[in-house]
Each structure stands twice: as C-alpha cells, then as structure tokens.
Length: 124
Image (cartoon, rainbow, N blue to C red):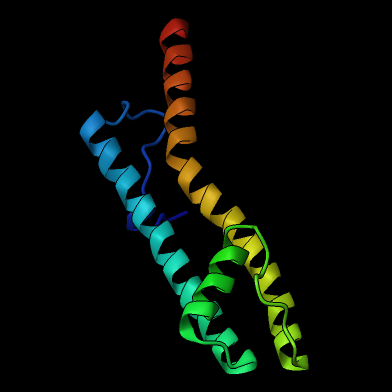
C-alpha cells in the first residue's frame, strides 16, 4: 500500500526518526489540521451568511462556536438555516474527530515505533 508523501511513516525495520525530522512531521500535521479548520470555518460562515443573512462577524462567531463544540450563538430562524445548522453541527463533530486523529497520529506512531524497536532489540 502506497502512502501519501505528506503522511509517510517509517516501517518496522527502519530506525526511529531523528528529532528534527519528527518535529517537521508534527508541523506538517498541524498545517493540515489548520487548513481543514480554515476551510471548515469558511464553509460555515458562508452558510450562515447565505441561509440566515447574518453579518460575516456573526457568521464567524457561530461557525467558530460550532467547530469548537460550544454550539451556535444565534438560533437559526429560517427552515434552510435550521437544516444548515444541523448539518454543519454534525460536520463540525466529524471535523473535530478527524483533526484529533491527524494531530495524534505522529505521536502515537513514534511511541509505538519506539516500543517496537525496544522489543525487537531485546529479542536479538
């Protein structure tokens, strides 16, 4: 199975990645999460402006609160706005889980890879 160049990890037989390369990998993962959050925020803001005719600052507040897990500030008044807010809330929950997974992946991989290397060295 081929890996995307952005998310390339060392295999079992390869040594542990050097610290500076690991931090660069961590920064790439952070950049991907920030990109995902920015796109999600713009999507939410656009929906609130279109369906609820909110100002861009109010739309930002509502979208950011939903992405942060707090819930909307302004209750939707239109049918379209209510549908959008519900779908966007579900989307925001998925984005939160995906973002957490992307952030945890390099840390979990390094921990498990180090554990595997320690177990392999004891077997030899």
